Image (cartoon, rainbow, N blue to C red; front, side):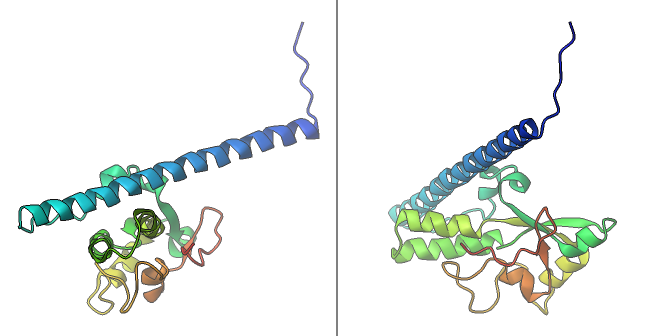
Length: 189
């Protein structure tokens, strides 16, 4: 006896709801993973600060130590793609940290040493400022150029704890869009 397949709108809707529920569940799991990873990063930075004070010597840290913890970045902290890449798929793309990693760590270091924020507040600040985007080579040159001065920094006066991470890209005219081609207006919570 062959199986009877019924194409009914309610069945499709149920499958669609299940798919949406699964996607929401996946996003929740990813969000929790990122938050827990940020907790580890904040604790690690605090450990380095304590260690260096105990040995009375500044040994520094590697500005890219977070990347392996957030691997794969393009799945965990991806925020969007340049509109220019969407409009012209032939262009070469480059992965760009929206807030440069060295800048992010230096600013976190300062905030930790100032001791004005709780660990949970620091985690929230870090998490909000983590992100990568794909941009064109020409856009990368504008960011990295001497005129903008934004290769490894943020716009003048920009503050990690309150300003929008997307401000660096906007400063050189980069428009970021999400996976549905909607402009990413802000990355602030």
